[in-house]
Amino acid sequence: MPADTFGAVSLEGVDADSAPAAATQASAEAGLTGPIIRDVDEAGLQELVELSQTLPVVIDFWADWCQPCKQLTPILEDVIRELDGRVVLAKIDTEANQQLSQMFGVQSIPTVVALVGGRPVPLFQGAQPKDQIVAVFNELLKVAANAGLTGRMVDVPAGPKTNPLHEAALAAEDAGDLEGAIEQWAKVLAQAPKDQVAKESIARLQLAKRVRDDSDGSELSLADAAFVEGNVEAAFDTLLDVIARSKGSDDAAFEAARERLLEMFTVLGVDPRVKAARARLSSLLF
Image 1 (cartoon, rainbow, N blue to C red):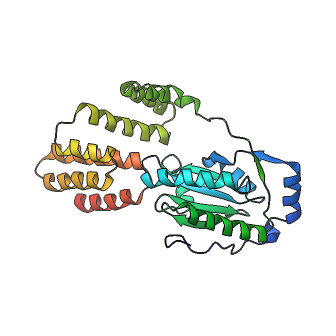
Image 2 (cartoon, one colour):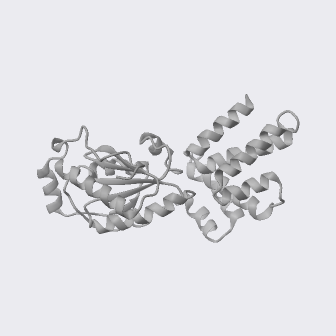
Image 3 (cartoon, rainbow, N blue to C red):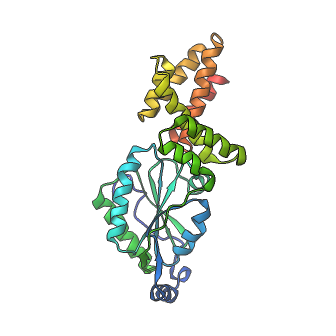
């Protein structure tokens, strides 16, 4: 097992009684069908829990800005396909599903967790090479088999699921119309004020628009560019430095940097770098 796994896969508290072999066999004979690779939100969690009573479910916590996630997810998908329906992969976007991330105790991404007999089993954090992932999954299958979880799913890919409220905004984004997309996401928020996807999308698009239109070489512009390029810590450091220098002497610069930093926090959502930067910001403000 690699050094940054959580340790050997175990089923502490999970036994065969939690998923009787007879029930598993019946499910297999009945022909379990569905997508072996799926995107899941909070509404789909219960289905995953129920599915894990028949075969192991692996959950990949990821985010669009996370470069290691982009390296890991295709490898996970390849391994899942090679396992031919013995394991299901559920992908959870941490930016859009912060409550699920908190529920599973996700501290950094990528994080990979299994559900076995309804119980969470931590697997590993960070990008891993394929051979190590195969080893982890083989061990997962062994302990799942000991609990009678030997079902197999016939792959039926899921169709795309889009919130109807989001369609116009996403279409504007696909067309490269930043202003139109921001306007459409604002309309979504007017109808659904708690829509986290809309909030994060507006912040992300406003930032992208600034990088496109207002790159004047100032520290704020440099922070924007660093953030868009994935240099999150550098962006945070720049803005926090501006806040520290301008506190009590330049209210306009102070407020501009603070608002920009909070906007970046919104874009990232649940992320340990946000937690660290929030702590630094609090120490400067109070």
